[in-house]
Image 1 (spheres, rainbow, N blue to C red):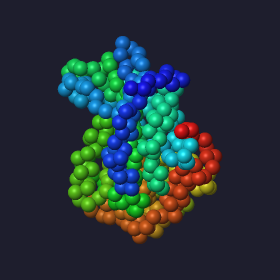
Image 2: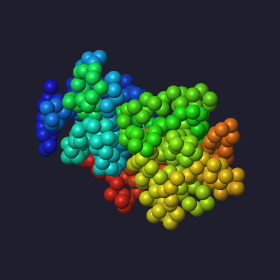
Image 3: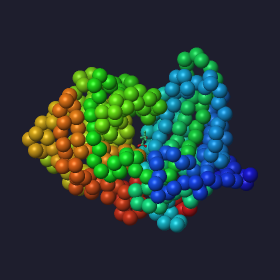
Image 4: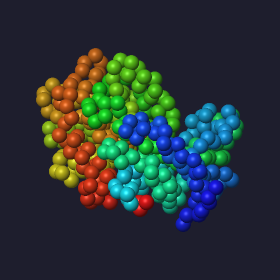
Length: 362
Ligand code: COI
């Protein structure tokens, strides 16, 4: 194996084999294929060890691995975009990293440093640049994850952690693509409560959402629309994205109350809307207010935002046996404008006025 060291001393072992030839880049499924390389670093004896990039592959574990029993794990999801033969743009890695460490603190996982993170991303992108899809709507999804990797069965904070970054060429997250999705509020289930782990990007939040999501899909809906856990009244987020409502000329986004994931695309949406002169409110919004706005004709658009989902228009919402239809099943102008602006910045076609993009020379 060919070995080199990067400027932040990441040891690189280059892959000798690639299965890229088996991938149909015209029909990418979300998270099915992985780049040839992965980043790996272990926390042991109170400190992070040597960072390494090596061929993507299996890791050796025992059935006593702590994370498999108690779920002590945090992850991130971000994207890199093909600009041209020499340039790839990573979208807001600094903000993703900040959330990664915030999630780590909540889960008693040791924090890590930005320099290693960004160097690892740059190196992975350079090594696997042929894996970055070029078609509109596609990107290289980047998944950093840290999990408890001590072997023991006592329910306590682990002493050892494994940190990986893997990459995956992706297309649209939902089968609907950019067409409107349908949502339903879950009967009898809640996602998170203030003081819990709802604002951390941790594995268990997703595991707990699978049953209500499965029931929603069996009933013909794309995703669950979560309400607050105390009053079962205020809208929080959707299964894999944040949510926004355009009522009149006001963009209303559920407030970060401690149980909502602070989305990076969510933050970009509210910043752009404010810049475009809309009234932007981050506040509690009840499901009744949304149904009322629908019946009095002021509900103009509903859409989700997320790294995987980008901007995802919502066409219907079901709650307690009643359904509202938004925008005649069509993509709203505001959602379209946001999608064009955000993806334009990501693909380097629109000026990056906010310094959101980290360009990598490949
Ligand atoms: C993302 O949008 O990056 C997420 O992490 C959602 C994921 C569960 C696919």
